[in-house]
Image 1: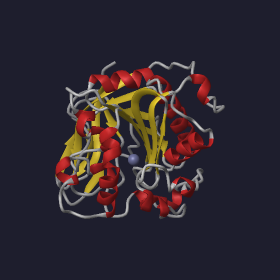
Image 2 (image 1 turned 180 degrees about the horizontal axis):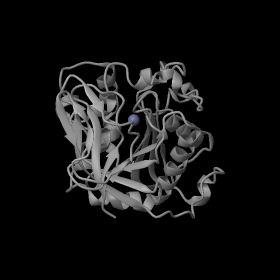
Image 3 (image 1 turned 90 degrees about the horizontal axis):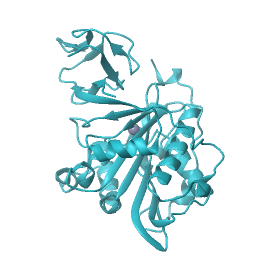
Length: 318
Ligand SMILES: [Zn+2]
């Protein structure tokens, strides 16, 4: 499938009005309430071509959403990649040099290595360090149901339930290629109190992804006590809707070790393979098969490159 077969329904918003911000870091704005409270951070464009998050933040800015207590930071992460977004080649602008969301360990951030994304991650680090609560807005290659990625800690799973949407909560450890921002520092520490969520809002360029990004952000801000319902009546979300949420526990990531990876079927994600031993694909010469019955395929990748995740495997646990 080439880029040409994608329909780009979303229009990337102009984020230049948010460049100056007020934090000394470009494209990062913090609003502070008089009443003390947690530092809540919402980030978009961690991947430069995932524009639904930029649309959600643009809406929040335009609606003058302000925190009732504590601080609220709205940030656009990989702006360099976003600037290269071209609806004719929408895949190309995920990043410039490397994936911004595989750099989040002190070892990598403190290393002498240089890249566009590392420079930006180092710039963003004080914001992420000071966040008590983080929501990172993403989208996916295939048009499947939205997924909340809650990591491994019970407190993140609890927060995903408080947010109340989407229906699917995925509990996962991330990628062999490197830690995500949502797993960094206290967010992944069982002894800490910081909590992070990552939402995959739907297919990168479908209109609905922007609605999901906005709704999830507003419900997240309400759930953590940053705003009240009446503060954020932006005319979309039904705050009374409480769909039954189901949890998928991710048991493993299939990391590509061969020079070539081929899926055995046209998998789009969330397929349930009934029988243990069902063929998922070939990693070089190696057959990759399901390790148990009713195995769920999560976010099969179209970037099938050695060292990267081809697909994650999980099961419904509730
Ligand atoms: Zn992403």
